[in-house]
Each structure stands twice: as C-alpha cells, then as structure tokens.
Length: 314
Image (cartoon, rainbow, N blue to C red):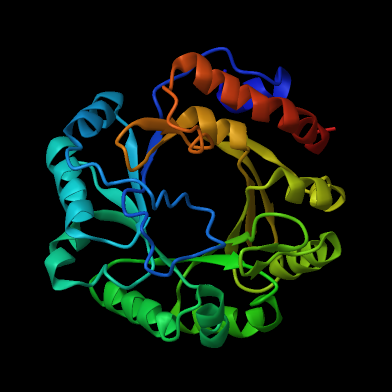
C-alpha cells in the first residue's frame, strides 16, 4: 500500500521509508534577499563543509537528488560532483539563472537530469517580484544557452497578483521559445508575505480558472488553504492516485496536489548544519530528528489534510 493510499484510507502513517527524493538547499543564502520565498534560507547558520556522511546516506537509500539552492557556489558544485561520482546518478536542479552558466560549473551541464529555471512572468513583473532589475534577462539567457547545450530546461514560476494580469504575454513567450512550464500559486490566502502580495480567495479561483487555459503546463497545488478554496472546482476533475500525490488532467493542463504530509515523510531537506530535517519540519529549532518525530510531523499534517483528500474522491 502506498503512502498516498494510506493517507486516503486511514489518514495516518505508521512507518517511515527511505526517501525517494532528497532536496538539498545548502545554497540558501539567496542573493535576492527574498522575503517571500518559501524555501528555507537559514541565513543565521554557517554552511556545512563536509557532506560525505549525508551523501553516503543518500547513496545507501538509493534516493534521487534535487539541488534546490537557486544559486550555485563552489561548495554546491562540489556536492553535485561528489554525488554523481558516488552514485552515477544525474540530478535535478532549480536555479535562478545567475550562476548555472558560470565557466567554473559548465562541466555540471552533463550531470543535470532536469533543469528548472525560475522565471515569474514577463520581464517587468519578474524583476518586480524578485526585487532585482535585470533578473529576467539573466534567467532567459540561461534558458537559451541551456537549450543550445542540448538540455530541455523547464520554467518554474510562482504565480501572484504581481504577474497574473500579463500572464498571457508570458505564456506566449514560453510558446515562442518552446519552453515547458511548471507553476505554483504563491502560498497563502489574502494579505502579503513580505513584499509579495497573496491572492484572496476570489482572486485565487479566478487565477486558477485562467491557468487552466493557455499553453500546456503543470499546476502544482501545495497549500491546503488553496485546496479548500478551490475544492468546488477540483471535485469536478478526474483524480488519479500517484505515489507522491494526486493528479488530474484538464484540457492540456496537469494539475497536481502534493500533500505536505507526503512530502514530510518521503523527502528529507538537508539544511545548513548538515543534519537531516523532514521537508516541512525545517523550523524545528535544532531538535534531534527521529523516526517518531518524522511520523508525528507527517501525521499532524495528515490529520489536517485527510478530510480534504477524502472529499476529492466522494
């Protein structure tokens, strides 16, 4: 029985398996000084220098690796090379487009399995959302160079009130350059997260309906609050149970809901101090992580999500 089925049928988990995917975010000192970013930055901690223990564990688990630092550095590049040399596995990467083309890291292009470049709308909207003039230009340059190198980069976007009004122009640009799109509505309902405005319930419904049209894309739904607001629409879809969540195809759009509790129990996020933290438990205050704590964290989210998931299949 998969964890997804467990969550659907029982609403709780009773065991922890080796993670299918490990997310590494040691490059968390984002040069954009994001206030809205939902990646954990941990700016007050010092980076771990020796990752051999963690890499050996990842190799032992047979896990895939996603490098989600957004900004490459010599330390991050070494981690990627060491993982590849140890396991022979290629990795996925999420990058802002600033450092991935650095000559020091060009050899890594042969190691990437999947490349995601973050672009949040048309140039003016992206630069405003990131608080950095010229960031869109850098990201698009990375896209074009990566394609010339034989890679097939994916654009990963955070959809927000800042960029939704000109989203059609953005999708037209993606269509012109034949770049696939994965997008996620900014987390939360109403108000602001730092400088980032968040959709109200009505705005979220309108934005979601808008995203269901246009170019083929993946819409990632990560926030239970979003699911609750969108539930009347989502109940009309034909949902499939996957190992890591629930998917539905609408027109040429793939909608995916990945419950927090599944991410917590299936993935581990390696943070600055080199210890293993469950994906949604990075604000644990440095407490030791045990299997019991992983289960407790997963089940605290599972209880919240259980009725929501069940409703999709009623």
